[in-house]
Image 1 (cartoon, rainbow over the protein chains, first blue to last red):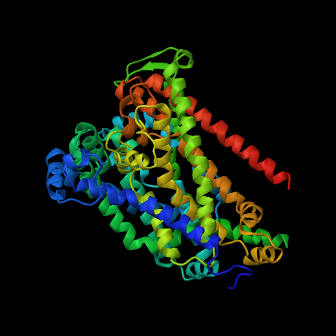
Image 2 (tube, each protein chain N blue to C red):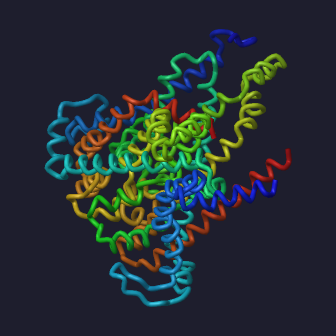
Length: 280
Length: 314
């Protein structure tokens, strides 16, 4: 598309690029700097001017991290929690989304609006009674405490409902019914296979959100054996305040897994995000 | 007609005995069954806790469950608690400093990324989005290092343009600025991707017509872009507000316990957390939660009201 009256190398275009590149550098620099600090030794970090290029002490710093917190244990805990929540969210949210999109029952519309409304409720504020419930169940210091409450959420239901409503023609569902499929069979054999892109995006969003969650795990997972990686990082940061090199080496290692997951699926992720918000 | 109906009715009643369920009934049962997990979970960990918080707030209540009813006394104490007021002031200040510039920059960024002449869009989109996948804890730790007073890189860079070392952690404004920058860093790209999606749904001929009429890019931005994606802007304002009112992790990690030596980083949620889970005053903390809840509801209503006003003036 040719734009009218804009030269190829105008000042406007150049300053636009300068703005873009600046924002990009600002977005990426902290990652680079995290590695710079994490790979230098502490004395290099504390001198002035500070180090600007990666050093050679990364493995030493990493070893110190392993000595101070149960790093791999925490990563495994985070992995278990994120995976369980993701599978559960995908199943229950797509099931509910299918019901809202394609099954006729009384109050369908009103209940769906209610679900959207609940996204506005600051659930975090109910943290004290939630803690009491979990403690009644005997789930303090149990990973179930951070899996069960997150097993299904309004955003996921909304997301799947929008996608299923637009991606699957009613005729397909009716045809299934005429052939004698039960509702669950229709969901499992017709709906699920045709909404794979939406499932993938929701799965990624959920996994990353749960991986990064902090307040609730901090409250219910007190024992070091059940710490997720975020809580372990906080412990590292709080207890060994001086050793920035070690702390940032730990932060770097904790960020890498999620960064890899994101970079591998980034195309799908951003496309899904853009699509989903327009579909509303 | 009526006999027909009667026959149908009759056969239906008989049908109940023969075939246990009609398709309609099956649908109804399946529908309610499939949506029930959400409602059960939301009931247990959403609705109940929020209302039970109100009840807890009327008691002196500790972590072991020992309680005694004291009516509105927690609220009376709260109203006279300078630390609580400070936490409200901090929360609003950080919310304001982080949200306004962030959403504006996100909008400008989205507008630029939507220009046809920009090369390498995928790369830029990816780069600005990456901060959002970083955990808040990691962000707070990294920026804690960047904002360090003596050996932080920011003060070092500022020294080149002749600015004396800023005490980011030890001053009120420094702390608020640092926390706001963390929030901006993490969310600006996310919001600009959301805006970008909305921008792409604006018909191109609007811009072409404006260009032919001699409107420059800046005029187009304010006269076409912003009005066309207003619903999305309102959405992001509401979400940022609800999030901003509950900011917690950044101040806890950046400023430490109590939000620093003179509570310069203490936010409402951080105060709630410390009252409940550090000092075990469940009753008092619940009063904090309930006040915060009311603040958020008022904010949301004001947002809705303004939105309605804007829509009706058109």
